[in-house]
Image 1: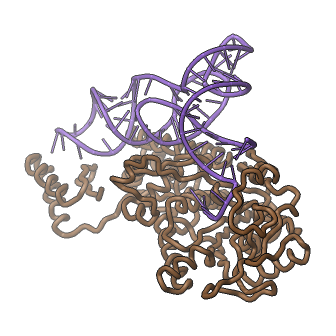
Image 2: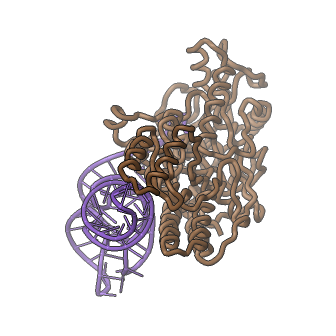
Image 3: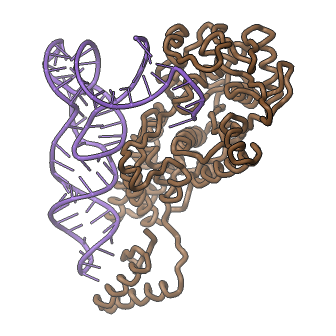
Length: 463
RNA sequence: GGCGGCGUGGCCGAGUGGUUAGGCAGGGGCCUGCAAAGCCCCGUACUCCGGUUCGAAUCCGGACGCCGCCUCCA
């Protein structure tokens, strides 16, 4: 049984699936108006891990993540840069998927785009107008939040208390400051779609209701996103579903923020608030490991010291792969527990990890278990129990693979000169010519290699 | 004003009412020709003050500090 924190209830509870063995997940994706930032990286990693884990456990997962390709910020950038909205969207969506690939985030099964669902949104909005839960103003159509009795469920407060603090701004034709735009009338030179209530474009909150229900159907299992979407975005999705008399998500799950804590550091050393930038300066797996090592609902601090910490921990994992020559797992392929043999220590490890993961995705404790097992495998090997050591190491690798983290033994293209140095050094060592061997090692190090002496001779790898 | 979260050893970061989290860094040792990798050992922790308890970092109350949401945001 998988247990997961449900934001709507404010507690960890059993994941109740619409149909046994199948998980339908909708994750609120990015607006493609800019380069992805660290927060995008975190939420995609968190839900990628969840998806992979569910799959690993034998569940059939339908994973949907939308792309918002119509939005004020997109229009603003297009106008600022004197190009079309489409050019902006095309560029930044490509950047998005490029970053996702580098992060090792598996592609969703469906990636609906808002602009492909405008007709359906218009239809929904029209039905709201008919039913009088929405109203027309001079600049568009607004949803009347007071028409939904339990509005505020996800925010954890009733409508009245939300209203007190809400900052009133802009359009005072709104009946309540909390009412939100379903449709924005087009201004000159803005993208527009025809609608009976005036040409324009959809507001942000409508696309996810329409697309999630279209692709996953009513009463789908899991609706995920960043904590900041809890209110008002998800609240507003819920409100629309309720108003449309549709049963919406069974569970709501939200991941915590990314903090860039040490501002001084980030300013001087590496101010990588851009995910793209981070991925250029570090092994992308380090970010995944950093994310895995804190609970998904906690905030994480991403800064040079925490990244460096993760990189060194990664070294330790990779050295296991080197020692046992483990194959590369994860990546675009989702691992299945059933494709591995679990016995003895491996089975116990698998069960401990599963217990932790199934308890609200306790990745930090699961990772701790895997590090423990890593040590055990090394000890076994040191003591000469090669076969069982290898089995355990393979299980560690498989379980990291289940979390989307590949252990890399590090295969490298070795040029001829380097190869000759390695052979010369081996010869020197056989001849017990240590001075020569050390000189050759220095030379290899200068050429950027890390040199280790293994049972079979000189081993080199890149740092 | 309303709602919510957090405060763990040098750093990151889990967790349970009573027995080692884990990683990184540091110290010592084993192994090694020397290293590296690996292994072993070491150190210290639970913001503060009360309370409940045989026993609390873990429950309750209070204080202090930090943060978030209520507005576009992953």
